[in-house]
Length: 208
Image (tube, rainbow, N blue to C red):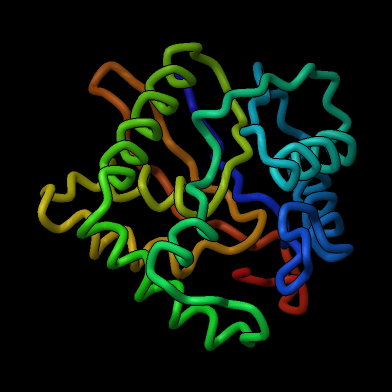
């Protein structure tokens, strides 16, 4: 039997010209998680190719004291949310977090209904999950909220027609550096926990 820990990256740089880098709080969140996982001895550490994912893995592993060479797997990358917003015809510049979230949910709902990139994203996520599950042992994966939501929706056995709505609900609540645990056993791959973030102090909890 194996277990997968799916970690959402730390807080990125919302509102900055370069979103794809961790904020100071994002690094702090990653180190806090690493300290909480210091007693764990994972067999592998994987991250996507986005800089916020790579930096989270490095800060987390350093704080945990893991002597592991991380593996890069682009299958764990987030979808391109800026392209989704642009396709919806909206500019998120200058919006506060609440207004951005409302726009984001409208744009991603449109994306799910009209773009071939949505099923491709789900398939990419499924393939990445199957590949890391096949390794066995304890695997830690640093990814993004949309991917965690897709994995959660799939492992809950969600009917295809309900996946978009379930994904929207899960994606909206995934906390930065939260941990979602997946068990891999003889009966298949199952969701054990979703969005654990007890390692964070209240002031460290962020969603974007």
